[in-house]
Each structure stands twice: as structure tokens, then as C-alpha cells.
Image (tube, rainbow, N blue to C red; front, side):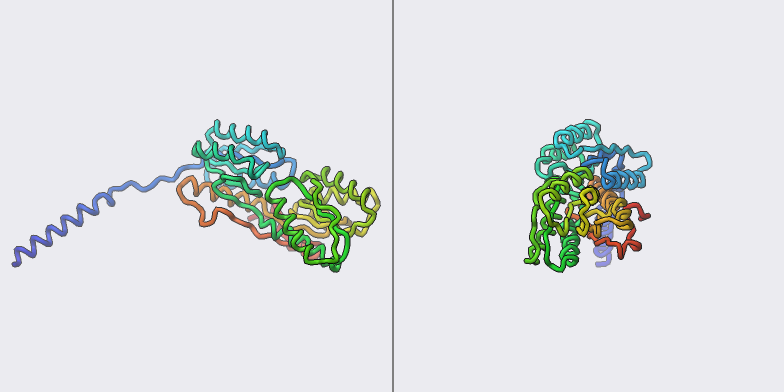
Length: 319
């Protein structure tokens, strides 16, 4: 009986060692390095997109000091962005950080990149087919600014919604604004379909048109800060005071505007630096087989006004 028990024990020990052997000699999984990143954004003439490009570069260099980052301005031109993505594919980048000129029409280019084994992370606006998206909670941002407008007007007055390029971020901001204004029956929206082009010049031109058409304007919501600054300039050119201008971005230029005598009174903030760094983090994890728990990451917005400006960290504050 003792001999039988010893035989069984030895057999069990041999089996345990044999079964464990493959695990003991398995090589650890290697981490794929981030060697190159392609960045395509709406316009590098906009400080917001410059901050995104710099944020991508800073985080990528933390992951690999020798990484190559190629940042390009699509200038809201879909065909130009198609060519940029094709160039990234030809260059065999590991990651594309994409601010889509058109969130739906960009899909064929995104599919080509992913078919080539490149991770695509959308920033600021959605991009059909992307692996993940990092953006501001734009519905919240539009709502914050227009809640401010409604409060300043005590729920009554003529309001302009100065629209912008038809990308998801802009559409969400406008929808957030409209939802708030709809709760105030005393507010009349005079216009909501004019495209201010996302630029200072576009905001200036759009506002000049409003001021010519409408003798009484109480407030203007612009979809970003460059349009707000252009709109303020137009109002001063027409000597029209008493107009409340609110926008979205929390950009350095609007910080300066809030410190001076302008019609701009509020801006719902974005954090392009944090957005860019998060996009690189998610992209790097995806390269190494670690998908995010949620492919849509929304960064909360806060309302920046003259009152709370001293506490606002801004786009360039150390993170």
C-alpha cells in the first residue's frame, strides 16, 4: 500500500512539473514602441489646434524621445485630409490623431488606415470608423454658454446662434444651446444657420451681416472663441453696445478679451492639451492590445467668466 501511494505521488509530481513547464519558459509579451504619429487637424491657424498638435507631440515624446510626429493642417478641406491620411499610411505611422473635416465622409480614409494596421483616434470631433474618440462634452459646453445668456437676459430677448463648420463638435454645441433656449419662451432666435467658418474673419463677416439685418440683437452665441472675437470686433465697428457674446473654447485670446472692455462675457472651456495627451495614451494602449473601457471619452467643460477668470487654468497651464 505504501509503495502504491509513493508511486501515485511521484506521478502527480511529474505531471505538475510537466504541465507547469510551458508557462515557466514562456517569453513575456513585448510592448510595441511608438515610432511615428500623424496628426491632421482642422486648421493650424487656430490656437486650439496648435495646442492639440503640441499636446500630442509632448506625450508622444514622453513615451519615446525618438518618436517622429508629423502635424498637418487640413484647413477644413476633406480632399486635403484624405491626401494627408494617405501620406500617413505611406509613411507607415503607428498612430493617427485625427480631427475630421467631415465626421462621416472621412470614413473611407479611416478604413484604409486601419486596414494598414494603423490605430486611428479622433479628437475634438467624431470620425466614422475610428478606434476611439476623445472630445469635449460639447452638448454640455453649448448648454453652459446659453444658460449664461438666458440668465443675463432674464429669459427674454433676441438671440443669434452663430453656427460653424458642420462637424460633430459644432452640431453638439448648437444642439446644447438650442435645448436651453427652448426652455425660455421669451427668447427669440433670429438666426441659427450662418456658418462663421470657425475663424475670426468668418465671425466678423457673419456678425456684420446680422447687424445689418437686425436692428435689435441682445445676445450672440458663437460656436468658438475666434468667431466670438470677430463678432465683437464687428459690433464695435457698428458701434452696437449692450450685446452679450458667449462662446466655447476658453482660449488664451478670450482670456484677454474677458480682461478688457469687450462684449464677450463667457466661454465654455475646452482642454485641448489634455485631450491630445489622452488620445495618445489611448492610441498607444490600442497598439498594444489594450482597448479603452469606453471608446468615447468626453472631457467636461466649465464656464469661464470675468468673475472666475483668475481661477481658470487655461490651455497652457502645467499638467
